[in-house]
Image (tube, helix red, strand yellow):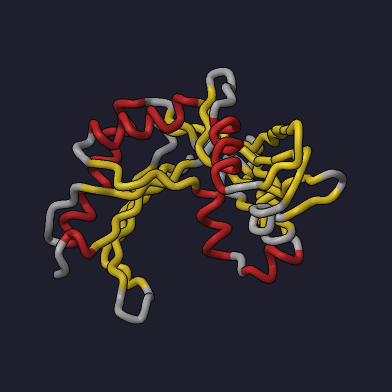
Amino acid sequence: MAAEKDIIVALELATTSIRAIAGQRMPDGTMQVLAFAEENAANCIRKGIIDNIDKTTQAISRVLGTIGLQLGQTISRVYVGLGGQSLHSVHNHIQRTFTEKTQISNSLIDQLMDTNRGVVYTNSEILEVIPQEYKVGSRAVPDTDIVGMQIEQMEANFLNIIARSSLSENIEKCVNGAGFEIAEMLITPLTLGDCILNASEKRAGCALADIPADSTTMAVYTNNIRRTLVVNPIG
């Protein structure tokens, strides 16, 4: 059996069940599935959001314990998917006007990103920022082409992926309470889009719908950029 550092364990906290899967990356880049376990979550998770901390913690402990038994070794770190009803996107626009022609630099772009990151949403936190186009005058410019341009005025457009602060806090509380460390918390709809859609589909424009038991997640792409993300409490 491979050492723990070579094994990836992923945990999904869904409305109907809590699932865990363990795999190992092969030399050709594919993943070999080594173990799988799940447990009913109807009494502890509602619409993708943890409803009962104690029951969720106990279920995670049992599911990951089963994975450890199947692997024949102890698990300490897991990757966790983050989704649920409060997850959604918000557009934010930041305008800058300069007293004289100014050349756009990476430092200026970083300042705009920091300003955007500083936006406060009531009872919510920014989980990820997706730059959209920049506006120079009336012209939209991709973020890859903006550095080096001479401007007097510009507008930076960002798509902020936000969720209730309690969403990630409760996940961390349950996973840690079960005796495990979170290696990384991944936004499930964005990760799903990266796995399923290719660059041509994102560039041409498409919508990706995920319809599990108790909610529906929709992500829209155009010009190879995520444009919106919404979770509806209907499944």
